[in-house]
Amino acid sequence: MTSPEPLIIFDTTLRDGEQSPGASMTRDEKVRIARALERLRVDVIEAGFPIASPGDFAAVKAVAEAVRDSTVCGLARALDADIDRAGEALRGANAARIHTFIATSPIHMEKKLRMTPAQVIEQAVHAVRRARQYTDDVEFSPEDAGRSEIDFLCRVLEAVIAAGARTVNIPDTVGYAVPHQFGRLIAQLRERIPNADLAVFSVHCHNDLGLAVANSLAAVRNGARQVECTINGLGERAGNAALEEIVMAVRTRQDHFQCDTRVDSTQIVNCSRLVSTITGFPVQPNKAIVGANAFAHESGIHQDGVLKHRETYEIMRAEEVGWTQNRMVLGKHSGRNAFRARLLELGISFATEEELNAAFSRFKDLADKKHEIFNEDLQALVTDATLDAANERVKLVSLRVCSETGETPRADLVLLCDGEEEPGTAIGSGPVDATFRAIESIVNSGTTLRLYSVNAITSGTDAQGEVTVRLEKGGQIVNGAGADTDIVIASAKAYLNAINKVLHPRARAHPQKGDV
Ligand code: KIV
Ligand code: ZN
Figure (cartoon, rainbow, N blue to C red):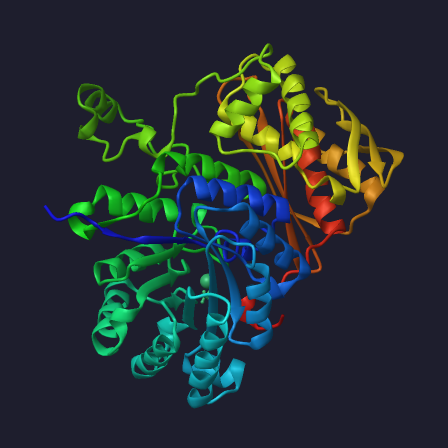
């Protein structure tokens, strides 16, 4: 048997994933996710779009300085200013890549760029040459390749490879492709471009028709050797190809794909949880690989089969992707070192001792209320503890809720607003509604609640509830997350987390819109 060819995993959770409405992340959150991605052993981490905002620049710079094992990449339009900014942000990286792009579809060139095809080629080549002044590792993407003319794509790609692009990425920007056709496109590009052997062919598929993973895998079958993907399939609109599905598909069906990644699959579930808690995007229970039900057998026939011989109904082991039995990991008597060591095993470290102390003190509070603390609890708690304190203008001081049969629920709370304690009271149709109204009686945010969801983090009635709240104001969407054994308190935390993001918006431009 021949050994599998390497498939490069390019993770864009921190860039395209962040373009998901409401998923914007702070610099420190990006660094935490980047560290988890490094432990997952992804090859390339696209950390952001440095020209988009000072915050994005700082985040890419911080990731570049924090990560040693994976290549760190910054996105840049095919413009000098973008490329210079990316080069600057990546200066501290051990291995840096600049990813530059320009649209090549007739509709984008004519209506958005207002450029001729010849001008597009010239700008693409110039951009690649400029990026090569910062690093040898330059990637070029013809944006909207899925709707571009193949003859033109061949011309652009041949020119950028000659100019020094070492990776050429074929994006299906609008999620229009279907697997058979997309696979054929990759095969034809590789056949027709004379210098194709000098570059790695990559794909970047969006999920508008639910085909992102299928299209990416069709491309792999036809010679693509890099896949751009995100944890949990997060991303612009319907998202990108889900990393966990790509990795496990090629690994489980190596007989078919004849390639494999260097990913440590046992880190997948941890990474998925971390991204979900930080962004406030819950994972649907039936999501492949990382959904809570992905390895749960309900039917008696299946259960019987699995007990007799696991492979009757299971094609992967739950442990292979990092599912563990709900294992009690820590308790009330665990000390700071055990806490720190356990978190390190989960890939979580702290930038400062204060952050560690804040998390440890929350852990002790939780251990008083909850007998057994699981990995999932630790992850939620750490996210709570590392909330961007500098940007937290409103905090919960205390909350009292009365909810009784036949009575209207009422919430009395005190918030700390810019250092001043302010009381608020409200009634509502339920305890959570009353709590949100009481918060609004103080902050008067002018937002509309778009989503409210509660998940139990672990099993048992003493489990922590993890609440996600999505608020909208003037077209801006933010997500907030909060966890607590008391779901009304978790709800208040999630609501305030979202409110703090509204009060401190992170202006962020979407690269595809060209409106930086
Ligand atoms: O979807 C897309 O086309 C992109 C490019 C910037 C690669 O995200
Ligand atoms: Zn994209």
